[in-house]
Length: 351
Image 1 (cartoon, rainbow, N blue to C red):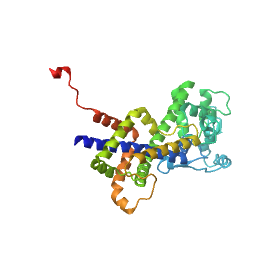
Image 2: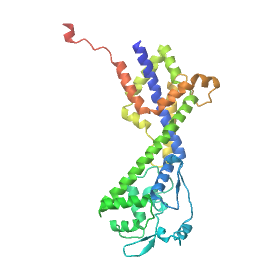
Image 3: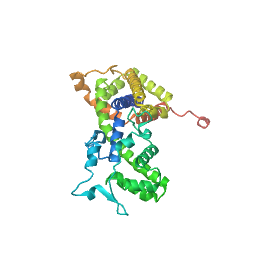
Image 4: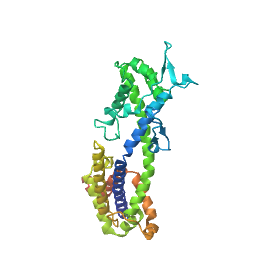
């Protein structure tokens, strides 16, 4: 009895792991098609650079925020001086010389080869910390040949009030005149911003993951409850699926399972898209070949299937949200437990 239940659990967990791989590949294919990571990064950089010509409207999630070209640069220059309150649009230095604010343009940083790439034809989905810092400093010092902390401080003083100026002033204060310390401070500021973006992307993805998981489970008829009942009632199918699970664990080390569930890592957008589609096809074929009763192609569920299988689809979708590494680790433990038999009698036992 206990062995039967364990075999059923192994079979269901194996299916959950395969479905998680399929779900992850589906999300990556959609992300690569819509360029969600690149669009999210573009909006995040627009927030950081705080260019008045490219404001960001907030819609609840970082991915839903939009960049809006409010006014052309010529109008912005004309509006830079307000006869009623000119002090709000200029900065006065210690020598008493007032100068108008000089905003940092978003395009100067985002279109920099270190950020956009050498070709500049595709939207980057990730920018390393040193690359962003170098591009930002070069954009700040574009017309100033001296690359020094003092030159950066003089340019920052001309920035309009905002989070960019506040962040750079804090980095300058911590640097205490040290160039490397200034770069490290900008690296930390940018890194913290990317951590927040990753958190927003993860929260956004959790909701989308469940919806997509439910749709895929319904379309391919991956019903966890019906599968468990079928495995419990059919010893031949139960044993065959448990054997497949054991063979899969033996053939795939944990590192390979984690890599299989990771996002596509090809260098450019087109290659990432092709890689994501190939992973999706491979995960779909393996899942539909393994799961009893699964359809080989997505179809519209009938009303009867919906009444009978909606709860099982919900369970499958929730299981898919946990990710393939979680289910692979559990599957490895269960298969090891099933393969553990009674301890052989030793020499002492024979005495």
